[in-house]
Length: 115
Length: 112
Image (tube, rainbow over all chains, first blue to last red; front, side, top):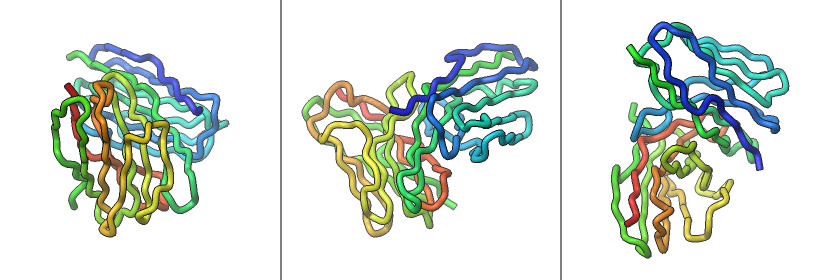
């Protein structure tokens, strides 16, 4: 069974602070996706990382895929109250070449940014 | 363009009853996946369908079943509901040839 462990589980910070969320596994994933979820809504895709060592930036968010493709991190610079939400990492274990992907999710990091 | 749509939004059922949840993928997407998200946890994979065929099944009992129609929409059926089936059921749409999955708003199922 492939497991993804996210840390920390909960994070409460003040507006303007920086933070990093970690996603670790003992398994290798062909790709890894980060999502943000609001209460009562579906997860919204933020980024997909595919290549080991890859770094992607989305405004104040920086995503990194580990060299061995077993871990990833999300760094937010100068957090804002609008960044509040549940951040989920999900590893892709594609079953077949032309069937898309099957995602294994971490349990999420609940981020609260206080004004 | 419309995103992934799911119906109903909320549903309350009694133990032992049956439920059918529906999902329409993004236009042009041929793969639909279903996930169960219990409060406080990440989503758990239930099924994946591509071109109307089941391509993957998660660790869920046979009470859970699904199908995909020629227009690529999908239904998730759950029989003999248990209290533990209370969760947010998410449908995800993908092209079938890329890794990105796009989620609908979910159906909140409450079993009493």
